[in-house]
Length: 65
Image 1 (cartoon, rainbow, N blue to C red):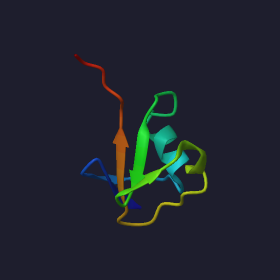
Image 2: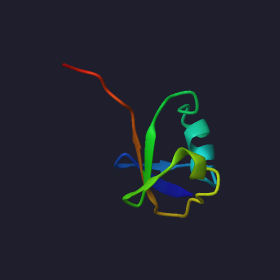
Image 3: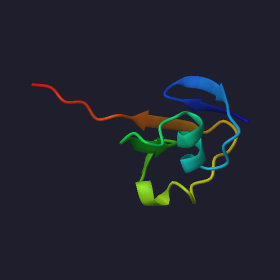
């Protein structure tokens, strides 16, 4: 199915948000996620199903001064 991840169209096999993070090699990285502009808690990623055309944001923390 095709979804948008951080503004880019991607064809993915993942059925849920946790599987998407695994598919994109983010599973060992601390990230925040949003689906269709709504924040998704880490504990809810397995039950958050993806659908054609969804918009996913994957955000990594940054440090700076």
